[in-house]
Image (cartoon, rainbow, N blue to C red; front, side, top):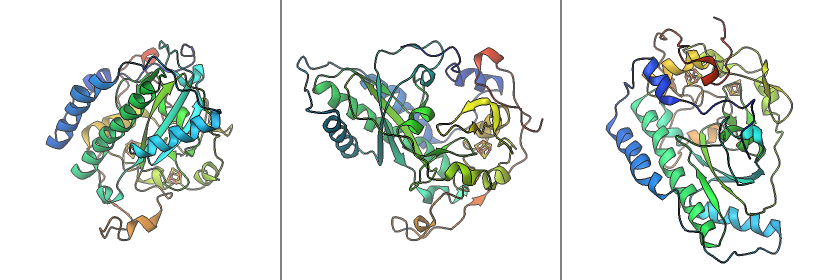
Length: 317
Ligand code: SF4
Ligand code: SF4
């Protein structure tokens, strides 16, 4: 299956960073984690597939077993969906038909001040631990004879994580451009494993979140780069509920994100963070609302050629 002609090209991180004068965030723990992902984890993306295929009695049994395994390997949430060409980046091709989406919760206590060194470390930590989960799940699938591919949460994947997460029932698309899970809120990250093994599929959810976003503007108000839209964009395609999507102005977000500890302000300020976490969360006394550090935003950056970047509206330019 090949990516739809209407799909965006893969996000070209190098071109974006080069365009704004390079990478300036340097934190030892973050650098070390990135090295572990690119140096260690990437070497474990592939492996031998066992000659004998285990056949499950029903797609439901396959799905239940896969979900149990993913949780055993560290997933907080797991969902399964069929892959469509619109889920694949333009120019990419895959041979698997199903995606097993896995999500892991980030730690609220690391977002007490945003952006910060602590929140930057947490953003990278979750990519590593999720990477371990998807690699172990892929190893297990190969051990029972099923071909599969790791779609790591950081870096060069063939699939777009957000449409997969929406179809796999992880939640609804928030105004801030991230998925909001009805129980976990937006502070989680996801990756996936794609496979040929038939499984029962999950369904998208309608928990009233998208509708709530139409009235709440907390993330919009706290975005220092003014990148979050007032309105949905009819040109940006539909979400799984048929709504026009909210589209972030990446040309505004990226320069701020890249110079301010990967920003992330829009996630902990989101009204869908469940505040029971803020009390004695894993033994830590945390605040009900983070301290938000807002610096003067850099100029927007639009230097990547239009056909090589994802569509974004130029909000309030
Ligand atoms: S990451 Fe920061 S700059 Fe980007 S949309 Fe969220 S709040 Fe705005
Ligand atoms: S802060 Fe409000 S508007 Fe923004 S994503 Fe969360 S619920 Fe939606």
